[in-house]
Length: 323
Length: 294
Image (cartoon, rainbow over all chains, first blue to last red; front, side, top):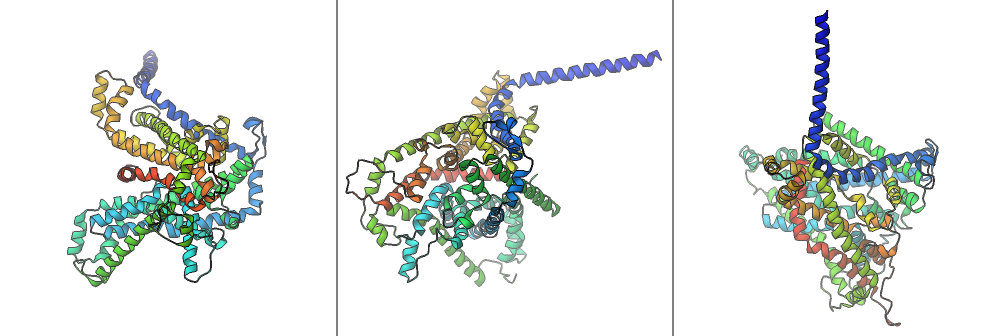
């Protein structure tokens, strides 16, 4: 009996001392790394202030938030902002506009860099390839304001070059900038012009890692260029395509605020209004903080769900996925 | 499937190659042409811009538009704002990103995984435009140049790439400097940063271009027209056709509205074009590092 007690206390002491020891090790480690923790401070503050706090700020979506009362003083109204939004006559129009633009972008813009990088990859003259690359990367570096400005200059009806050309060929002026039909094509063309060239880099990087011996072996086996493309080149960029597509799904309800904002005017508003610009107009210019936060939350929740579910589907299909 | 030649000289191959070369040449030209037109038109008279649809060389070169640009106090001021925010903002961004990336590159740092998981979550979900706007307002940063810098002080993708790069540096170098009595701060400053010059240059350029081109933050946080950066003024001049000319012009003088727009665009693009050779070299490298390690 007494023996057992003794062992029990010993074990207890042992645990205590090992706990104490562990704490000591921890303290020593923290002390040794103290400068590393000091270095962390600015970054931690940044994420707390501009990422974590705004996430917490989402609670105002469930309030009738007033800046004077603050979050703690404002009235809680549950899901009223959301039901208001879904019942708003504008909701369907916004949803359709947002989704149509996104789908057009996925169908027409998303494959463009893949195609161009495959075409660039077929070019054997290195210098020719380099020159083309140098040209097509340029638009990526100018601002959206510059792109929109150039679009306005090229397409305006009073002496814009494109309309002058159309008239020289006997056609009638087209008001591209203030047109409901032309808004969506314009947005897609702008995106392709600005980002397609730059988008090829990631694929070209993946392609450059393909071993040349694979192609040689395929040629020996009698594979033509199309079969080489199908069996060697495409598999080499498949995982990159999948990852980019998963990430793209996360922003199906985000159309890129700047571009849409810059290209919207009173004549094309019916098709141009999307969630992003709606949040800005209501939240920032009209001060409807709670309502616009609710719209924003709806948008980012759908994005989160889409990104997670596409990731899952991709993994089921044997791809490595994002997370 | 039917192309079974052992070399690239089959008829289909030759036709494809021809098409490929021509198509890409066209695409390359289309990427450049709008800029060339804007540049040419900025040196042309309004009469010529109205008369000729497209041109790369003006018949008669005039620098009238640039004369007006140089006299415009509004443009000067906004140019100053953009230059200041770009230079200062890039330094701040690099400071925040590097000081955060370095400790996170130490695998045995307590709390590292927690922090990494949190910041990766912020990449897929965030508060959104309005809660961030309210935060900036509560910090009394509206109309302050800090509002153009601080909310984007760290780009999470850049952070993760720099962190991975620090991780790939030989640990022995840092350990030996610690044994020599350097603190972690001194190790970062004397050993790690000199070894990381190319990647810091890359992300410095990333941040600088981002600041120069930033329109959104100014639209959101700057109500005072005196503090507007160039991108906002550019929109005023070209898209909203709001004049920002000098006031001391002769009464009967008609300014060349069109070439003035072109000249303003040129002024806002020139700095980017000047560093374009570096951009191309380093940016492509940065994207590739990101693709391999991210």
